[in-house]
Length: 58
Image 1 (tube, rainbow, N blue to C red):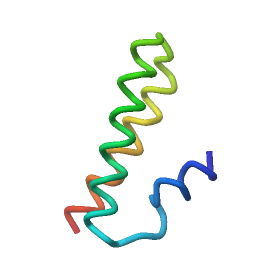
Image 2: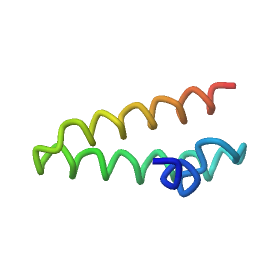
Image 3: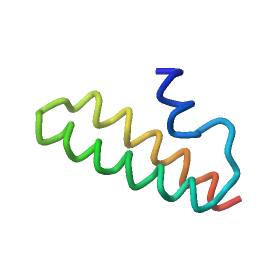
């Protein structure tokens, strides 16, 4: 999972456009996971989206 955090820039980037792009990617993956009945994966992605959205508010 740490690799995904780096890919999606959860820990390092402060660029708001990059964060928004990462949120869009994560939401797309979250929907796909839910459609494939991978609910735990979808929940993990939801939590990452929430982290990024909170970072945008700062």
